Image (tube, rainbow, N blue to C red; front, side, top):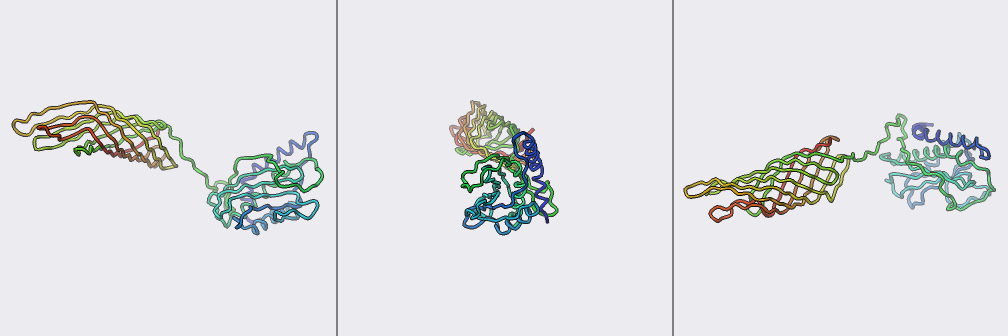
Length: 359
């Protein structure tokens, strides 16, 4: 039958389970024995102006697949049949009215019992030209597996409206293999979810510029993240040179942040939110020239920032991290001869580059 057995191999475990359950029910008193497949099957395609799959090819594959199982007639349409008996089974196909639809719902309906069984089929990156055959194989396998489960004592034959059917069973989606001769179960692409990283450690270099006087400090920082919270420490130093002498700057602070925005994929991660820095700022002066006194001063340092942090995970264990921040700080302003020369206060912008580790 061409490459039919490839797709069936993915549905065979489910078919065996369903048929085993049907056999157990048949052994109980008062329940009907498993039935052979119906002689007449009707396909109910999607109600779309432009069919998302080739219905003609779908019918051809269905007739070929089910012909060896005793199904003498396979047709398509939504009109009520003229025959009194009508089709013995309906195969309903539901999917988006677009050629790039990524999934379809397959449903087998038994007019005699008013019961149905359905499955979800996902195409992943299956080519559009191969989808009619894959859908037909999936419908045929679902009919074979479900028909015995739907067996009950035959009621009087009447044509019932389609909305009278109710769902008997809903199962998790079943993956579909490519209908190629050399395909195997491992060939079906797996959907990979972003890994869970509850804790990560970040170390790297950092630089801050205070815009009011143009002072800059740089150094290192270490930070741990747990969920959306982050806690870290930073040590930054810098210097300014004037005609009266040199001014040294130092900031030692702890940081606390919360990510309001947290987006992630398998490799990329983006976080943004507010943070505060609380610590100690110090400035010192070395005079240059006669009559100029040197000195040092210290004061608490407090900053409030808004940061954006991006990470690219090269593996599940480590990533490259880039963080940009902007905010305002209160601290020290150094003066020489009454003129402000350096500052650890005012509006600021910062940049950090480093490595993140996920234990």
